Image 1 (cartoon, rainbow, N blue to C red):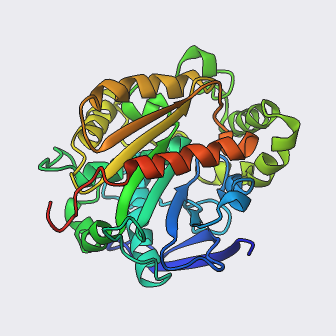
Image 2: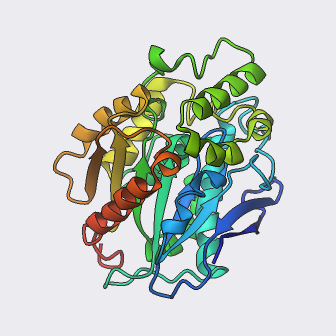
Length: 339
């Protein structure tokens, strides 16, 4: 059955904010109660249509692909409220709050079953590119035995507490697909400056980025990327590619280290990247790899020669990689109720 679009009405998630609604793609169809469920997070400039070439390969997996605020049918990006006046990082915390609220929505409204000891049920969170940012910050909230010395962009940790029970009962693993180095405090390398030049006006930068990404793909993959391309959305978000968890890259690195070094024992986390991808993504992988050395509930998969838009260029390879990582992560985490 083809995927269908719906809107999650999440209400007011933080006092003083406007009600939140998020558009999402769902392949529920004839999926059974024992099917795997993936919640997928897109990157900058491309909405959830980026997964379209992958969807036909998901035989027994339900994909729920979320459009971030500002993208194609979702509500507008958060505007600073005065809590952190004119702080360009303030919307970041809302992205993370949106994510935990949406996970609860999938459990309570879409009836995604909780994870079971036999490996069925539950949710796998899959993030791509800059979509890994909210996922990594989310891991920071779950950090085992750690209280980060910061609020999450103006939102106290207590605001996330109402969602923690359903997170523990439903979330079984997180897969980071090609996070860029800026998410762990590594500045963009010169090799990508042609795609994302901070010295150019926002509208020009967005157009160059989108055209450069699409133009680099094989012809058969370009229609999928073009369908997902959202230049207008990207501009409307204030170029959310510029939005970061902190303005100081040293603080970004600190936050990422807390998140990725202190993964709770009831959760497993994997990293997938290709050797043919952007340098910023291999920089990030090189940063994460020693951090995870010896950690039993983590896994890393390296794909030879593959690129950043693998779900569009080689969906079969992408499907095998994600499916293999899901199987590898099964059993690496403890039961949340006994952790």
